[in-house]
Length: 152
Length: 152
Image (cartoon, rainbow over all chains, first blue to last red):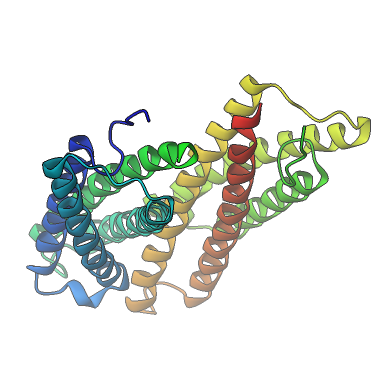
């Protein structure tokens, strides 16, 4: 069987999952170390989604690392289908969370600056950018695994 | 060749495209008949994206209607690939626009009500809901056409 680079059990997939874990953790940290993130629904939503993405990516990174070490790639259609569906749902949710966070930050920047400290806004922007990067990698994983799915 | 319901040139696809056109037009109208939509980036973004989705869906609705009338479905891989890519990009952009609009509306609702009239907020919410429905239908079209693509 042909090996699709980036699909489950390859070193490229391991890198993608590691990147997702790092970016979503960075997004969560930048958001939640600010004290007022729970005052807006969009920020709470981003924190919730990042809390889902981190364990998902980390678990799959462990699976990939194990597959690379024992040189036995995972090739079961059922498991692959679950991974594809999970990536798909999480990437949609991540995109929605990152967009709504950017929309909210834009409003906060235009509102009265004394009402809201401006230094928090740049942190929220960095958090949204990290979420976008995480979405991009997650979407890459989804496409590679979807490509592999019909060949099984 | 098997007919995939919902792919280009079927009556189901015609209904999907018609629904997209109606929902995105409704979203555009609810947003732009308010006078202050250009004061927030997220609202301008939603209007821009809806201005892209409406002609795209309307053109494809015409193509589908024509194909159904002459009973000759479109089966060229190149054109189908362009349609799949277009649906894909537009559905991502629509989702991002709808999410950021909802995030902004949430902030406006929590801000001082006298500063911003509350009746505009419900209009913006309806507009975002219409954009979500348009995204849902657009995503359906994308999936059906993607399913057809490898069989050509």
